[in-house]
Length: 186
Ligand SMILES: [Cu+2]
Ligand SMILES: [Zn+2]
Image (tube, rainbow, N blue to C red; front, top):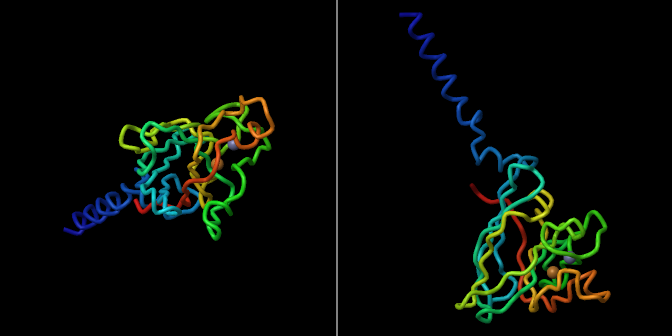
């Protein structure tokens, strides 16, 4: 009888450890150093709305972005970047420049020569929805956390425009809307 109770206790202890050994998601997101799941609510401009989810890839160097933002002109093309600050005290204007911790010139998403925050272009569908569906963003959730995801009015020339603006902003025009990357509750 004593032996049986001991076995039961051992089994319970073992079972209690399983969620941690599987790296269950809520535990990851509660430790700031392990945060791999982020969410952006695109709130700056009421003409646009949507959510974008960011996941750090298993390589620990890149990430995926998935989500929808509505309200754009059908079939229009828009440059998208992470900007350096999550400061929306003056809407998207106060979010600074493209996030660029390695002091590179502007380029395409995942490019060798690019800002970490460069996310390329997204084309709105026939309903005016921008669908984020990329796996090769050149930064991880921890780097982008607390910074702003900005959607611009124009197509990003990806650094190929042959002028100074191209090498800093991609000549992607004004900032239509933005939102801050936060830790997701999963
Ligand atoms: Cu931008
Ligand atoms: Zn850039």
